[in-house]
Length: 591
Image 1 (cartoon, rainbow, N blue to C red):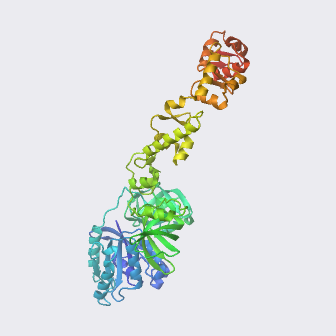
Image 2: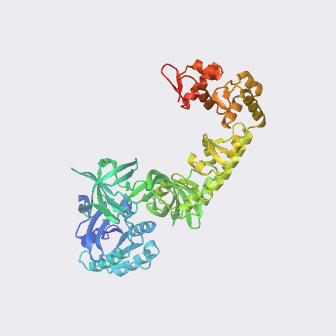
């Protein structure tokens, strides 16, 4: 299927031309038919020889309905620009052409209507001159046909020219992501809420789950059924006009400008950095048009890049955008289409510091809206693959850990910084070597501890939740090493006679020193202030195995030749290590 949108000044015969081509009146409202004026979007379709099914989106031409016109034209790749022979080039002709140019429409047919009422040559020449300098004329002279919807003269030429034009339009990706801008929503008794729109790419199937993005938020919805060209179909691929019956959605929960999206694709954002093309200056307030949506926005100029303006747009309501999206900017106060804006960053950083705007402009000068993984990684340093895909960036690289992707060379830099961080910490706190993982994550400005571990290079390693410098972590200051040696000498003959608090104070072994010795594996800690030689617990299990089983705590204390102060925590350590088991009567047995 092909979808074509009309454009042109009010009362220049757009609807009459669509009616003549399709046999269907696109003006569906009673007021439109009574006044002979298109007010809302109209829809009609036909089978066009040489092109197949062609759906038309007929838009209003009156100046008061420009937002409605843009809602119809926004998602459509092909335009039918209509100029009346007896009217010539008019203000809304110019405004609609400016809108098509801002949207980057490159495929158009210029039709001069009412050729039975006036010589079409002057209007045709004037229109061609206007079109030549826009995106519509970028590929050469725009195809042009004169006709009369009233007499039928020239309609076959219009059909042939339109078929030729549509044959040259590139086919969209049927397997691409879906973003269906809603241009109409209504209820059907017994079916529920139905939305319509132009499916630009991708495929929608009955039963699919999509994200419904509205001004109020986003939620998952299911497609109960769908129609295309008034026929029930199991699926539809872009480009196509579709009507989707949504399950569990109330009519008041969806409106024109909302969007149905492939889950995980696009970023729902109210702040976007853009490159404005063909815009001389930005007013304090403007309206941003994307697809069928129109959202007020406040622009913040950031700088210039040649003829382009770089700016940040703060939207009154979030829009689902991806990098490279083409936005139309309109000044509502002057009823003027300002030009186009290309989305450069849909997840921009905050601008809090003095000079941040100028620095940001420097970053944006390198960007032109082409999604590129390497470029995004250079600027963001670390980002999840899911976030890249949501921004519209094709992800081909391999994550370093989990779903995290990092810029080239960053892990090496992080590893060097981490080594310096651990060395500085160990020099300042020799009794507590190594940096806690969370502290290292914050110091390196990383979003996940897993990235700290990914940056580790020998001799760095993780031990007990700390980044330590390999064997250096087992070394103790000389004075502590001497004190530990004295403790080991004390217990050499009586392995379970732990030194008391007075002896530890005499040796200068406080809480920090004892903790360092335990981490280094030089002592074994049973309780606060109770330490023995390494391996004392297993040695105790072998000694207690010689006792008649089971045994009491007192029998264990006597067998080990120690005090109650040491015996009780030692027995608890044996239980915890599953070297002993405690019976209901408080006696134990060696396992």
